[in-house]
Length: 107
Length: 122
Image (cartoon, rainbow over all chains, first blue to last red):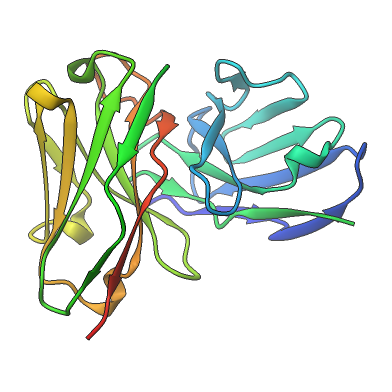
């Protein structure tokens, strides 16, 4: 199975900050990488697929980059509604596997 | 709009089975694969498998083979996930999620259900 490792596991940031989260795959996955956002008690929300393509309706403040084994999710200007936990997921091969999550908290 | 509505929370005894439902609306149910993913307390997200609602064909993660059964009822646009021989390790929130691809499994998830908490306790 492909292991996905996110860093950091948590971070504190202020409204307006630029935030970057990293996801590493244990082997090359090309650009077969997605990002999700989840708030407590809510369904996950899909943000990005193919490493950098926004899902329908996702604001452009979210961006993704990377290929192979290293990927990043960037939130350009953090807003109150962005405080949540973010997960990466590879779909290069089954079983689908997920990163452990990065919790973005208010500083 | 696409919606996945899941059944309510369940409490089960060890050794029992549980069936979670996922009712789809806002799109053609048979055109998109459904994945099931769970998260146990303090653990990460774990993919369990998918079902092709058109054909009923399934693909289960090796860990769950022999213990999980995914089915569907196309007449009511509902997918089901049944887990048998429950143990405390199966206490988790179970999510259904729609695959982004049309009539194929891409592994890209575009919509998620709200989750169903299953608690296994004697």
